[in-house]
Length: 412
Image (cartoon, rainbow, N blue to C red; front, side, top):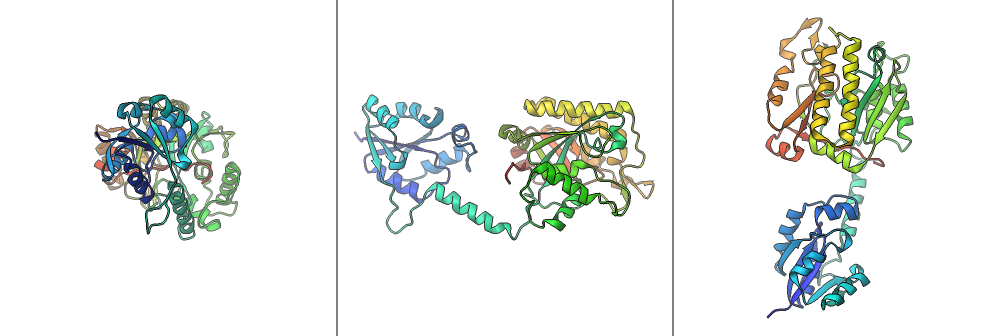
């Protein structure tokens, strides 16, 4: 009866070094491989794998030196114990740098021979490791920065318009924004604060400078709203804050242009919750001459409804309650439209323009079973629909027009 050999690892960036290790281990007998689960990698290495466990399992099983492979069901650095007890190997083989006295002790307790192999490349090939490959990818990304713009954009989630004093004078409240990596083509006049972003590019063409985010946001706000600008309209502070402050942010407005306080959330699981449930759907840009403020009807009760919805939206996001998030997200948008109906049915040169209405798009996507809520990005009139969906990955596969979002983390 053939001897059994066991090895374990993540095998996320599967490379020739892994294959050579499998080949050497398989010289001792039939090779069985334990693979770290997605949850284990996230807990232990504090990042998601490049490839999900099902895909990594498929790749490892396809290697001809491997008899069979399993996703480890344990936790932490010793996540392989359940797999080890199922396989009951004769040999446990590790790379020298992956060895430990705890693994040796586990083998002794079970009567398994413990073997450490030196990391050696296959004849004629370069030495490979996941760490070195990641370093090469990072260096390549850094070298490409000079030829690409990394200025983020922002998406408002709830409380839009509260950053204007003519709104917050009726009732103070929060605006909620997220800073987005520019992973897609960001079009002008589409509700993602492109006017502010374009002004930033005049000072810093490729990336934001490294400095305290709120101070940077203040500088951008003052640059955009300098006293000799054309026209008297002051851009809301949520634009500069949403771009410059990473993660999820809420800012409190009370009859002033700049918020009295900011609160940020950079919790990884919270940001992933948003990424897993928000997608953008591009519409036509807001038309030239289009006004979204004509016909506005701002009252205390309507502003209070907006403020209340934003408060509930923040709490739902922090608790990662999808149902409450969708409900409060929709309530915030409905409160915005109640005050500014031209967000949906814009006015051009003082006249209603039915062909510019975005209501047909709202009706189309609202009727989809996997769409839980929606809003127009920014001031509306076109641009992007920002949908709350059951699963962003699934939705984007079914609806090719949809765009997943990537929230900018601190330090980027």
